[in-house]
Image 1 (cartoon, rainbow, N blue to C red):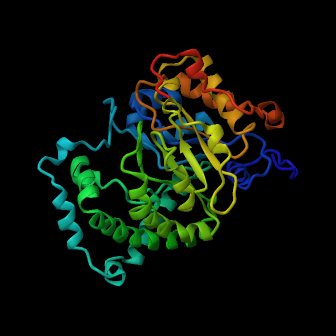
Image 2 (tube, rainbow, N blue to C red):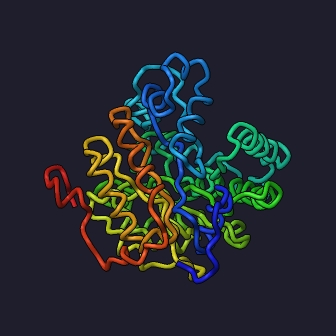
Length: 390
């Protein structure tokens, strides 16, 4: 950690800002927001399911306060007792009849010039939406700092949400210029939103970090070739990110799947932190630790408690071993923010979530030196070899 004087009794905001800047902290900061299941949240909050359902957002806030989180990304707020396991998934069956020519037709209808594309962007309207977002968080989530989470700021890769996977992937092969045109047009709007966000970050005195970055990978690597992404996609992401990077706002990229083929491209596009990590697919955080941002910064890590193995299926001891692993690969919590690799499912025992946050909360950063471990394997793989693909 830095040789700067250590602060004591930090507020959550102070703790987050100091960690972003590489300064000493009283404890490693943690983040919340991605917990699924009304019953799970009620149990963490220590209230009945009925009390939770009477005011779901208040229940989510209480659960995160019990966990002792410093910040929260855009939170999952389940508002019914039904167990939701795959909310928000893009399914081809929802896009029956979609063809790659649909993307071509859509692209052909877009304006040809940047100036014409931006005519449909209304700054005042967009700014008000952002103000509503921040005002709500500051009013309702007092004492828990908002970690802004705007997916479009990280790029517009997943056109499969609109057209389905098959039509999208075929269009990438048949009509690459059309796919690029759609990405570029949407990125122009997002860049203008980014400029507004730069002003609002200063006005609202926000922690200078943002979480974004769309899914590009699955367990086998990038969904389309890295060469295609470098030519047609990543330049549009860099276009969006530039105003935020120039303003000193650290951007954290979500990291589903095997990101190894494109992780350097994330950094070249302006990201300076990573979130998630599916260790079972061979992602090695010790290797990621060696990388630097395009600005030469050490990376920030929204560390990934595994929602695929450890949290749903592990014991309390497994959970503590995983937190120790997070501390090891961040050299004792340097640049680390405790988080989950993705939204926890309803099958995750709330006790495992609570134990992870408790265990880290009691960690003393002054003992970080013992966690300067050169390399070790993900503990789940060492103790539960079955089911790991790395």
